[in-house]
Image (tube, rainbow, N blue to C red):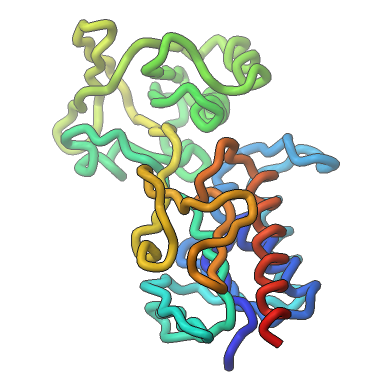
Length: 301
């Protein structure tokens, strides 16, 4: 079977693209290597979607997945290995090859690591990237959160309800998250904030038992039972680099039109170069990319 549109990635951008494409009566294959719903499923509380009451990211994503599936999008759990260009595109996955007349790349981005020596050794042994997933393991204990943006503050707030103490480690002079989140953090008595500090090392025999930070030129050890890294995301676009332009950080170098230099290849969501990365902008990208793909297909008739 040759699909009208294959979508790589089933986060909010990819799912929204699937909804719009199916409403335009296009056949859709939605491919996701991890969990359908994307990074939003890790958010404990989403409260900035217009017209929607606050809900967990997992609940929001589940509704999007159901909507796309109910409209007739075919969901495929598989990892995309490459895309072969042509009038008909071939999407090569670890589950086989699939063909489509157009492709939307909505591959999202993965959690960014600190890049400190020894980090990989402690991942899963004290270092985590998801409080929703792993926070319960640290109930009544002391944990650190690296990052003072929205993601870091959300992680800290969730952990503060489980842990004895939460220490936010921020490399800048102040927190950079939304004011509402900063105010909530300030109200939690068990959250401590350490600014102007960078993690330079880890301690612990088998599992993490502390971090070493450089604070204004001074080396300080902080005992911790666990560390949550929330310093943003990095795109995974390398396998598409022969088909789309990438910027210096590896994001798809496309404007708001979501088109690329390859005819019939579009990009959407957090994998695209953009100023604002929010669930609403990801959904907007998905709709724009889907409509652009539909126009492309209709022009080929």
